[in-house]
Image 1: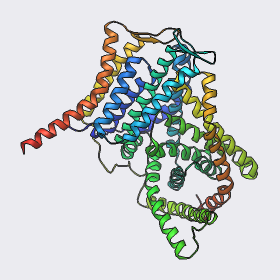
Image 2 (image 1 turned 30 degrees about the vertical axis):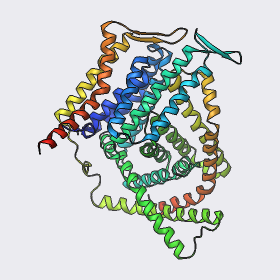
Image 3 (image 1 turned 90 degrees about the horizontal axis):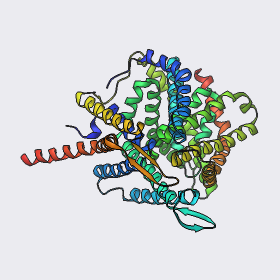
Image 4 (image 1 turned 135 degrees about the vertical axis):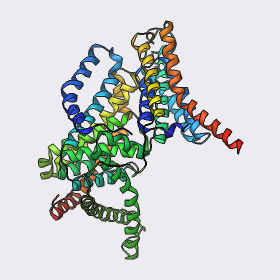
Length: 228
Length: 292
């Protein structure tokens, strides 16, 4: 097993990806490839965004306590994915983000996608799932203050996140199937996915409604008890 | 010789992403046929006649995906028949078959990948990129069975205290919620204690090591080089338009000249590489056994 000599490579990834690689891939994709190649570009950009995050995360001196809490929340999400029909992943991701910050939320969402797909099947969609759930957490972390203050806002955010997740994953479905983006196919995919979209939105609202307060108290208690 | 699954995780990863990368991003019908056939063959070589249900599922998925396109897309010159004033064309049907071959092929590849790349190996690969993320992943993996055991204990003691009844659905849900709440409080506190214990034992002062040692040997290097060489030939053929195709308005699939043939042959060799390794190993094993 060879080990990449870590720090310098990671630092170069942090600079190269957002300023050079992502624009280069997007422009090259628009100029060089014909319209059938959207899927390569979207997959490449998704993977690079995740790389960027990994590199940035590694640079920080995150305490081991925080890391362990993130892994505990990931495990709870993973276990929750076995509940039939209702999925608490996005809700738990949002709750983590509210109390531990957007970065922790991103991690919980992205890591849950990787982990649970060991069971549910890995595929090229894993990168998109990671990004979609990760962004759900990251944005919740940015909006943490207003979301914590007003319950209805939190529930609305949960519902929107569920719908957005379904819409993002359907873009991927269409790109994969047709190789070019066809709006009619996208509408068709959205239409057939309505039960899933509803289940995402409903389970987010339900779990946020029931879990936000108790979990907030638990995480807050841990924070004051151990000073994370 | 080792089995294909016993090669270094990095070498296996490179091979898998070469094969699935071409399958996902090229779309040439000949390569799709090679990919689908190879994927099914590899899965069967590894698993024998088990997993009949997933074969049935994949077959149904193939049928649905193949038939969906002619109902949505009405491009193409050869009209087969007309439904609701909309033409159903041969080209759209074959395009659907091609897309279905691509998707089902990649699904088969990833089914085998999930079997071969156990979580331990993924952690090993992830650890080179980011040791911290690998740590989060491995701890979460270990936590899931631990939570399950703990949940059993908690619900048993709740039952013993007379708090938990499964008589009606409301009580059942309440009981589950209570167990879940207890588990999560415990899990978070236990996590903090684990973290402190890790820090006390010097976590973060050195590089993380693996339980199993993966060594990148010369054979692994050969596998990576052969994979990349075959991939390069295929990619060159695709880039030079030697493996070109259009479906609309008329089907036109071309394999141009020597480069096109080489590209398709290289992809075939790439797909058959692990099947060859597996067969070679099991033949040798049988031979060695017969000498005992």
